[in-house]
Amino acid sequence: MSEPINVVVTGAAGQIAYSLLYQLAAGSVFGPNQPINLRLLDIPVMMTVLDGVIMELEDLALPLLREITPTADPNVAFKDVAAAFLVGSMPRKEGMERKDLLAANAEIFKVQGKALDQHARKDVKVLVVGNPANTNAWICSHHAPSIPKENFTAMTRLDQNRAQAALAARLNVSVDKVKNVIIWGNHSSTQYPDAAHATVNLQGSTKPVPSVVNDDNWLNTTFVEKIQKRGAAVISARKMSSAMSAAKAAGDHMRDWWIGTKPGEWVSMGVLSDGSYGIPRDIVFSFPVAIENGQYKIVQGLPINDLARSKLSITSKELEEERTEANNVLQNK
Ligand code: NAI
Image (tube, rainbow, N blue to C red):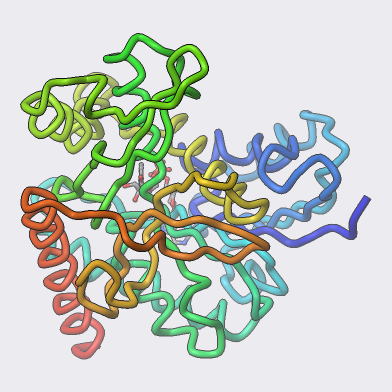
């Protein structure tokens, strides 16, 4: 058994955290031999709710879960953390412009970036879930100059899982038979779910998804729009945003980053662009990555056709605009 690591979850009294905390405590993210201390950050008015969550965590009676620290103080929450799930953010309220949402969240992620900078381990792995996730991750990393920029990532794993499930349903196979579908760009409706490089295992032999589906119109329009609009479809049916599936995706993202991907397989993560595939540098863009020894590398050399190129350009433009807005907001403070 290893020494316990400190793990912080922000927005700990919220919906996503409610499902995520069980996975962390049960060992499905950091492994069955890694005890954890949980730091639970939320805002002061949520502390009573958080008390209830803590009672439930205790009642899970799970041996890997050691100390639990509820707090509204980022300086306490981020102390010596090895992994950070930044889930809490200001939700969009009625009549709120996108700019107002960005402004409210820019401040939250600036404060948390500074707290990470001062208090976290320098090798901390940060996953931003709270929206706008990519730009929040960018803001956070800019306020944590002592932590390498590659340690800040944004979640597009839910989109990847949705895409994988949609392809498996179309091909009438179980979801584990489909690999290497890619989410490019922003976690927003401009994202590009790309099945061009995906494979499916049919009776033990691996085949390219596009040739098995054999319907470019479905792959290039119906499939793409279904994934882009899936979050909105869940909200419309449930009257609340995806939470169980978002928490599962957050666990998947961190587990793969912590433990690694299998040879020849990749996953999608929002990471700081290094200019790969002609994407502008210095935006947090979702790329296919392969992970070894806790380090991810952007998968290189995949052919990009004209359709994909135009979609990549739309989503990278949106991220550049969000970065400009975030800069304006932060400079005017
Ligand atoms: P929720 O509203 O149930 O919970 C959010 C929690 O964050 C609340 O308890 C709130 O008090 C807390 N919070 C607000 N400001 C905070 C601060 N400064 N510090 C710490 N905690 C703070 O929301 P839910 O459903 O858990 O979603 C959380 C976020 O995740 C939202 O921004 C949502 O849009 C985003 N999301 C992202 C997905 C992705 O794929 N990247 C998928 C689904 C949701």
